[in-house]
Length: 304
Image (cartoon, rainbow, N blue to C red; front, side, top):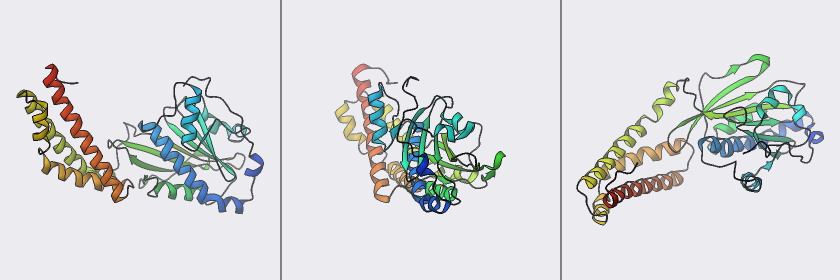
């Protein structure tokens, strides 16, 4: 989206209401944390993984996309000057939107000068807010897995906890949850979502958690590919191929389905949701393979 769309859009100023007493702020912490985790997961993770679209061809479409996600375009007036240089840098040239959560602002910043997606939690100090946010991220609704031994004290009193989550294609993503300690500023937390860095090794336990799934997926995919290649070599009529293909690789499919459902449930799906998602993926995959064989039968060219 062009820089002209990424502006500071005036909204109702909530700075006064954000100046709540500490006890009131702490009572809001669980609800604020749930909102922050929702934006970090549904919007940031969705945008970084390509599952959702923030930017669009024009401002009206962008605004529609943002509102569909429970956000408003821009940055509430007065917020920018309260978050300090570090917070301002996270918003630099980004696609911006926000959600009001009680006396807090949940500020989204996607892209811009950084190739990731950030969620800023802006408001009054609350001692239990960081723990509430990390708990909300690890809850099934968000599905992030805390990485062991990644809690760090950073320069300036900030604290960091790292999380991992995978998309439907099993690609890993990293979330850095930063708790900010600065009594002069109102930036309380920053949640930064990015593809897993190529120079950072996956933790041994987490890397092995999907080993059964990956092995089953590779075996099943290889079986389907072999069946399609046979259908291409023999130039089988597509209708006849589809009938035989429907009964091919059923043992491999059962093994894959079992591992895929387990994995989906590890990512926070319900059993029913996992079954529906996996069965839909299996049906789509078979349809794509069958379409490749039909295309080859028609054109004599192997589809790319």
